[in-house]
Image (tube, rainbow, N blue to C red; front, side, top):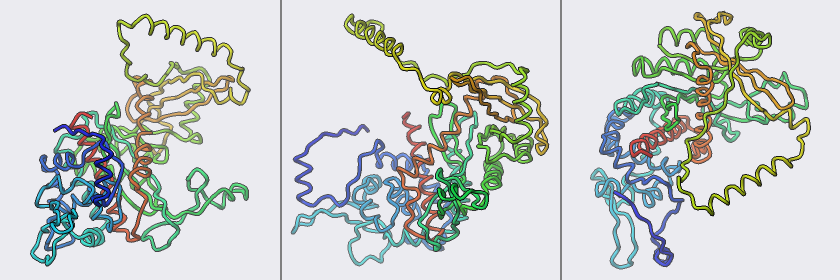
Length: 482
């Protein structure tokens, strides 16, 4: 059903005078009402409730109400549970579920408008203003174990997405880890205090000079390791696994364990391609993924490794056949077949101006030339066995970057699958940056790091439900062809 909006300043101002607004926020592109109706009609909300690892034997409030309320808070990027009444008044939760959640009432004596909610048990002596109490949501999150909640997401939630055909047949997944920074308070359960440089990378203080050490900062943090599913065109993003742990824990073993559990829970063939950063380089695990799990891995190699030095040596000796590479252009922009003469004349004048400005551009200084890349080239080397810890032959994609001052840089990708089209493999690796963009979006626009509790169970609840809400929104947008 389409929604229409009309600007009416007088109506809004008069509503403010009557006190009808308890909470305000920016208008989003997705209707919360339509979103909740979609996951209800497709029985996704019921399936989430049926599989939720509840710590309670008896439920006065149905689990689907708890999950819908938690999703509504994350939908609005509101994480403190005491703000739940404002979310209910301003959001679409009541409208989506109708009288069983509540309805607006006008008091005959004062004319005030408020919410009236019947609740879900017979213990209410007074009219409720929310479907369930905010303290119930907090206690439920506090009592639900963090490990069980993460296992629920990795097993049951991802299984529900699988039932609803949310996975692309190509099976492309991206793995990565990110730090979630906290206030420097040791009462954050399970957190780590680590030394970070100015780029937010962890460093070993004993290996730094005094000048380098002065630019570093001690910060408290958790680490989030996640699996993200997308397609080759990056049209959608679904979180398919997560681990929340202390910041000091190494992400490599955690990610490969996450991949193994994914295959155990959802079967072989769903994940076919895994794109990783060099922090996950592990020859034994790469070989195991390819041989036992049927997953091919694409990952960059470090410059100090023998396999890098071997293939770069071949390139410098002229033994490799390079071909030019350029990023895939965006979709073609339609140009009208019949343009008015005035538009044609304007475009011709613009092209002449651009050509003149290019000819008059000042010569770049040597420093600028050294950073201006003029072309990229790629070449493949298959069947390498230099990586001794990997039980299978590997294939290398050698990338050569040529700069305006003539100097050349190399970087290398390792692939457990044969490289038949080097340009396509290079293009495919470009998808890895999309998971970093998801981290940025969730931190900046969903306040993923805005933890108001120091209890690890509540922190895990916030992380899991933020990623769940994001993935459900992606599924919904894909379903409505957005």
